[in-house]
Length: 226
Image (cartoon, rainbow, N blue to C red):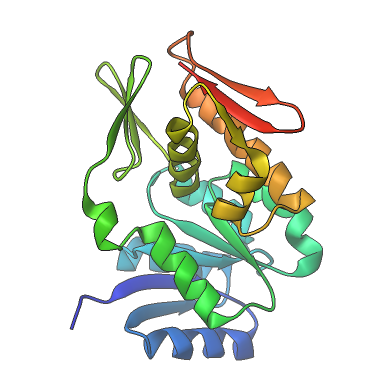
């Protein structure tokens, strides 16, 4: 049997928390359940999980605040937010604090599992190290790293996937609709706003080479120039 994926799940609705926990544990996941943000942080420190699945609205400490605290000491661990439909407009703020993905309630367990595996990049083809030259940077897609001279810049899973798509169309337009459908699942307004946030993050991480640009081609998409 393969090694179990360790998950800290923070969900303050007992019935939903139990359903998620039991469903994941029957699929070879090891789930540590927290009822609030404080408990989730303690489990994160104690259990060294592979991924965090955090409800946005929780007692004592909300999911966004918890993600921000985790990111201050751990840039790599994937974080998925669980949000009520009415909260989705706030998830852009969550991405700014280090979230990688989100699911709107209600969601299917299969969708959650697909998102988890995607973030952990456990598929065999992604075990091969993919190094791509971007101006003066070296981009390691698999390890989610940018290297500029001796400086390592860590990318989130979503940043790495977005940059990889842009590199596949270097100096040509990457269509916005294509990127949204490929990485976010659909091209609605909220996801488009989310992608804009990640484009801004990538620009900041690529600013050490002034010859690199990510241009917004209004009405079409983005172009990586290097």
